[in-house]
Length: 324
Image (cartoon, rainbow, N blue to C red):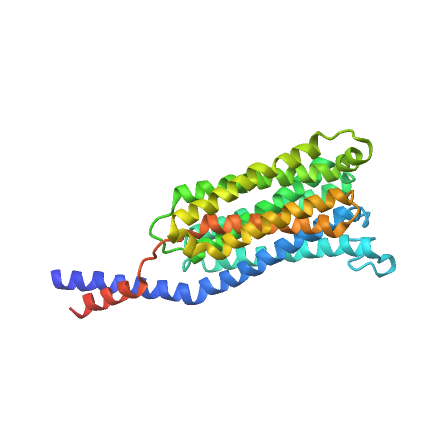
């Protein structure tokens, strides 16, 4: 009886390992590919939204969710209408993609980790809220707080999506580096606050008023001052990675990208002010850099560069146990 019991336990453990291998080879691959597409679509959505705001195209389509009462307004098409229409189209495609991932997680809930359907449900909820804010931006005629909330929820969508992707990549990590996560979370939070101030700056026309009449400069000055703690926190992360060489070896590509984005973001901000915010390419590039900055920081937070459990070693152990 004891022999049969031990054999049964080993067979169950082996079947569990085989199911885990199936999950990694099939379901995990599908969710990772869909997740990568979601990240690219969300960054594009944020950048196109920024371009729409800079080009003053937020009300180019006076109705919602259609544009001039049709899905494709050929008779009214110009650059501004195209930007607003394409922004809505991208948002619709992002919503469909997330709904598809949520549906797959429900269908395959017995073969995937329990946290995945729950997290996708949160992602779907954020999409619904994001769509509601998109409608309110038109209904409220580009109210500043509505526009700001619209962008911040888009960032939350991006952060949540990347966290899912990284958790799928690192589901066999032994333990996370909590202190490293905390160190990275600080500049991420500051960047989100900086983005909030930036949207308020553009949606209230405070920057133009300050540069033209030297009035209402508080928001602009606050936006510029926030660049200092962000730069300091990034340099602290780089210094820590050099001190802990294992972190530098595992993350040097991401850390190099952070340094490049930091200095290019400062340069784009300075160029935007020098040109009195009259060059949309600088402002749009500023928005793109902020999105990539948040994406890389989030990736580093959830990446957990530690030694992974040896799957092949576990498989061999189960095989040896069964053979014995």
